[in-house]
Image 1 (cartoon, rainbow, N blue to C red):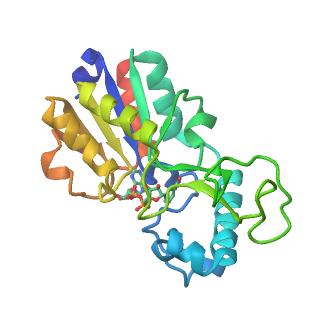
Image 2: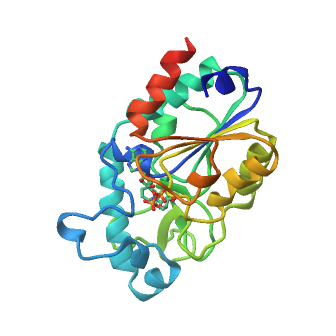
Length: 236
Ligand code: NAD
């Protein structure tokens, strides 16, 4: 496996919420705690939920945004940033919306599901940086429509440019690492399959089995924050 990484001329790393679990950002599949314990994220992260109860969805994201603002990159994020320095041509594709890869020093991160730190107008679909944060949800200063987090909700299209770039990176890779993702949410879950179809070596890093496991060349069972630094340690 280490030789595949050493010899790779294009490595693509696909990450999911598992890589941020060790930073204290809960995955959707983990039980929520406290105030939000009785809400199912899959019921809140949808356009229908926002239409039905925009204040509830905005407030849930405000809580998640606070969690993310307090979170710091963990050894898994840092190891990927280090890999981008040590190994030529590493493309990072993430399903995460927390911006922790960028904080760890990764550049040109392909964000498939947007970023919770950004806000957009629900009507115009344009990014809004300056607004009055009093009401829940706040109002678009240009058109008066409600503002929403700039993330992709269940049932929504992914940003086309990001999806195309990710697909190209998967098809062009000779090694793909799938880290901390359950490989259940499409189209992201299709990327390792695209890589396999094009002859890449696929490595899964996850403490649990996923639908990708039987197809992967290697399945490294463990936490990303343990496994990735060990891989990088072997490189130098
Ligand atoms: P997911 O489908 O990516 O599943 C999480 C996976 O991480 C599971 O397979 C789990 O076994 C694995 N995992 C848990 N701890 C790990 C660790 N320490 N190291 C490696 N793997 C670990 O993610 P989800 O929670 O089902 O969320 C679906 C979508 O929701 C995401 O793709 C994302 O868009 C969004 N989301 C983002 C964040 C974030 O930005 N941090 C958090 C929650 C949800």
